[in-house]
Image 1 (spheres, one colour):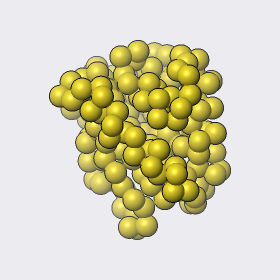
Image 2 (spheres, one colour):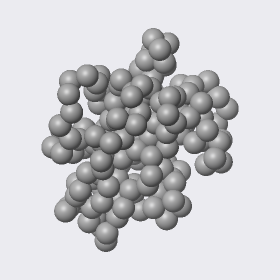
Image 3 (cartoon, rainbow, N blue to C red):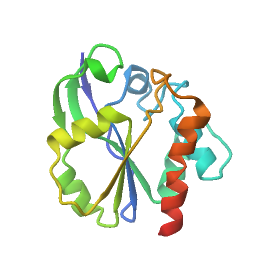
Image 4 (cartoon, one colour):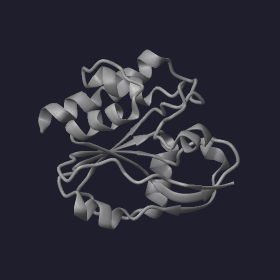
Length: 164
C-alpha cells in the first residue's frame, strides 16, 4: 500500500522538531498524527506540557504550536502493508533542507523511535548544528518498556523548553 506523510505541524518560531517515520494505518485513516488511540504520543505531550488531555485534534495541534514544538515525519512516501516500520519499502525522505531553513529557531530534533532516527541518518545529511535525541517509540508495538519508563525519557522535552 502506498503511504504519504502529512504536512508538518509547525509555526515559524518552532524550536523543537519531533520526527516519526511515517503515519500508521489508523493515523492515515483519521488524517491525524498519532491517531491510534493506543499510541502514547499525545498522552505524553499533554502530561509533559502540563495540560489536560484532549482527544480533539485541533487542541492537540495547538498544544504543540503554542509550545514551539514542530511535528513531522522523516519519510514523505513509502510502500507499506500495515503500520510496522519494519515493513517500510521504497521510501523517500521529506525535504528537511527547506524545512529547517524556514524554521531557523529549531535547534533540537527528537526522534520518536529508533527507526525514525535510522531513516533520518540514511537520507538526511545536515550540519552538526542540531542536537539529535532518539526517544523510545510511543507506538503500541513498542511493548519493551513501560508507559512510565517511556514517559520519563520523553520528559527531556520539559528540560529543553526550560532552556529556551
